[in-house]
Image (tube, rainbow, N blue to C red; front, side, top):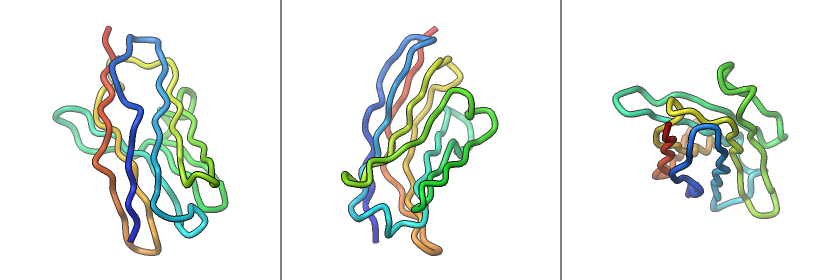
Length: 115
């Protein structure tokens, strides 16, 4: 069992930046990988980026140039740095912890980008 909690969302103007945080209830080294997903209004949830227990990172192709996933293992926290935001980035951003075959999701944090 893993509890995760996201924070850092908010309202930002186009071209701005936000850094999202996701705190896990256990060591990141005991979690196979942590991922960020987002869901825009009226659309399906989509994968944004992931980081493994060994710190290997992977990104959805459309996010690679503007988003960066990182972690602070001492604080059991994963970050998503988002730069050059556009209104199309608006949505709820979710954190997901994967342990073996089980996924644990947070409640999400709202990101709104105004034009």
